[in-house]
Image 1 (tube, helix red, strand yellow):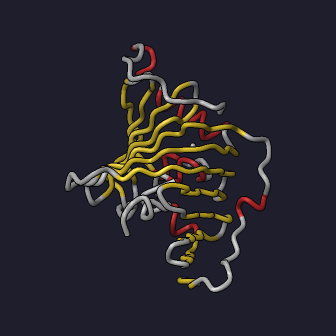
Image 2 (cartoon, helix red, strand yellow; image 1 turned 90 degrees about the vertical axis):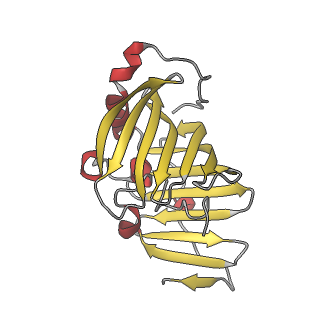
Length: 216
């Protein structure tokens, strides 16, 4: 299954309506505080919702795959990640299970959420906050108006090799991931808004009638 469907939370899984700054060289002062900004984002942003764009660059050099959609999350372990274009797919974490609903295939896949998170990129958004247990963090310098952090998974079976996280104002704005197949996935959070409380129904999922349920 190709990304973005394979993104799920195994490759995967963002604040005040922020859009990425233009591609300019950032001030040198930004270079040193990427890790601290990431820690503050994880500690302070307990719930958020917004929209994103995603581009997947394959190792073979074929045309990049583009997608876009909306998301919401509530730490720990609850999230909703919805692809709206070019096709519809929904990923829901209810705190215990990860549900993946492929409308085209009329198929639902479900698995234990603990097995799905681990040291994956999604742990940055919906993990309990124990970044150092899941990742080896290093300073990635400053570029494109952002402070960058390089994160490498501590678990060998995380599904990706490394990840770059771009932050500004203690807010996550960009994720760049290289997976074990040589694919590079870029996610830009075009809108990310903190929320005092999100509706619990966002993080609930019931398989539609007639859907083929796998893994339950």
